[in-house]
Image (tube, rainbow, N blue to C red; front, side, top):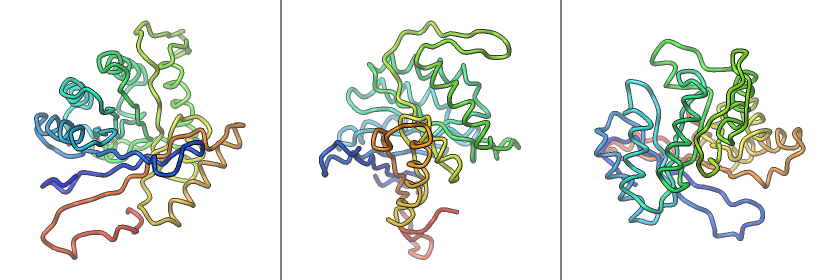
Length: 247
């Protein structure tokens, strides 16, 4: 999808092993200081063009509020899935994240996807540090339990949500080999931001598979989302090579 900001990403959902070749799904991701109405326009356009999902960015003070944007996109569409692309485990409390996506999933008729990472631009803009792989693993396990309606212990208190909604798939955004292994161990899907060069994707998938095997899981059971960045510019020199590893 082409927009004037240069901050829209294409997301390809690679097929699981049991799917037939050719069933790859496509999504569009939006990240930038756009008016909320433009997010809605993008979601409506993506659905009309046949995209399978839209992913909404979450960087405090740089993008509109995640849950407001996702709710408006869900309200304006009927088929397309709406995902957080991605929220994080630092600036968002785990219970707030779980409650937000469960409410959205109920409202949207089960179309919500939860993409979560250790924190990148979202934490840097407010002077915080991203979670390490071990802390992310702990928080990811708690989030998965909360959105599944299970009870967990937080701050010495047993916590269990009362929101009833369809199951929310949890996708872990991978920023390092260790985090990719955590994603393979715990998540329903993995979001890769390594570029689109085949060798980079293969390397990242090896990390995911290692984590899955360590947990006794079949790597083919995970959905894999590959972020393919795109931009529109008048200067060819300003565009990144499609196979280049992101900085």
